[in-house]
Image (tube, rainbow, N blue to C red; front, side, top):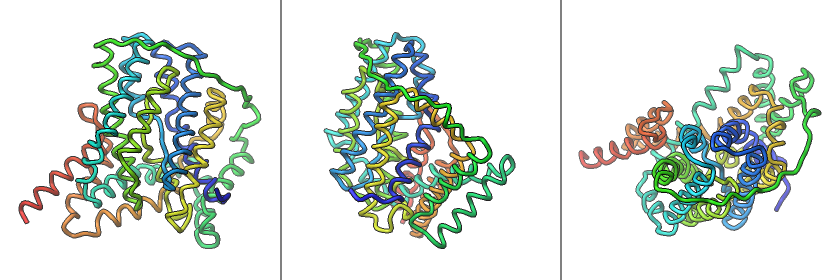
Length: 383
């Protein structure tokens, strides 16, 4: 695998954004389930190892930047639903949910569904999912105009002088500025290896209905569907059923250690697919491999990584993520709106997705895509 700084930087930024945005939810979900300190560490170990191995393996095999992730909406769901169940019942529900995901992949049902989604609508959904990152970039201005101004200057200089190394320059500049201001305290981080802790699963109908089925639905609609859409919006056409199957099998294998679910990444995947990573789309897959390597490291050190990523100021992470995704947001909007006959449906998909609404436990990305497809079909019948 070629060693290129843009690939390494994209992988690091993807992992940084993924962990800082939701690792606290994982810890909270494990705590609500009744996990002790060793078991919480095991959850983090399991998720890091599972994502690392699957990212590396799938990206190397398909030569496509495939990123896997935990389900952030799923973690939020677990926080509200695990309190009524034992940890063993929760683990059993995780295994059942992963089994359902595996069966979805093996049966080819999900692949057949994705073939009926028009490309402009998929691009519109992607743009809607990522829009808040672009907006959040400039919300930093009132609190920290110096940081935003410095990173924007680094971004503009990089785009003009070193386009392939733009995000490398942005990340290094941001870390240097925060270090000089005393905001990046890496010296306080102590490294300790984590280890997996087995929890024997038990199965109950209540856990199936209260945990497994909702987690399966949320993971498929809010994570795997946008994940496949992002791959296709960037021109990649991997074997959808195979990818879904592997994420399900990974979860099935690691559920007893706290791997509550594994799915295709959406937002972090987009960071590894932009032109800044490599002008040649066929050579961007090493970025996902590097992300997998960083995931392995975070898994091996488990809970220690929480302190590491907590050392990065939220404003820095927000700015870096927003700048890293600007190109993807722009290309997605272009792909969504360039066809006159699809523009209305794509615009509706974009607006609903960007709204961030959640109805019946289903996120805005799924609702945006569903309503956009309905309007697309209405327009076809009318035409």
